[in-house]
Length: 219
Image 1: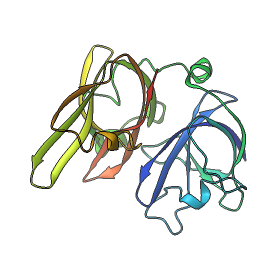
Image 2: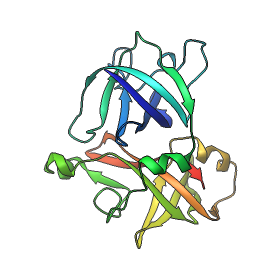
Image 3: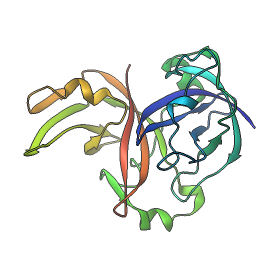
């Protein structure tokens, strides 16, 4: 099955990438996963992230992806398995302004059911399928980068933000945006103005799914 998507995330996952985007035909989320062969889980290896000319696909590219099956799991209902024998094809490029015309910013009560930075796998397992989702596009104002040393060899760069009147703290970033703050002194650093965040629900780790910032887009 051929999917035409705007690629919105290309974030770190094991030895490859977590890739997802918006279906340009219906505005729905799609996560492109691998068949798992040669991977730790279902991350997309670099070899499957390039076009015929060996140029790497990038965020905001409009691409055609040949998928072999729809394969949701209990916490990620958006998953489609990439056909690794067919190269992705770039058919255009777009912007966040055009994206929100076909997929407006989410307006939910919470970021994945509560204000914590993780959610238990047992909670998700008991949800009805219609209530499950693992990708969000939200708008926030003046989010704060938190650089903190917790102990010897334990240093983190996370994000605090407010959404729909609720405060969210210490969300990890997987898109590389955090790396530019890795040499900063401990402290809080505000990103002034409007910012779009794509938040993904990660795979299970010690019975929890962490809520990960998969992309930071300055508006």
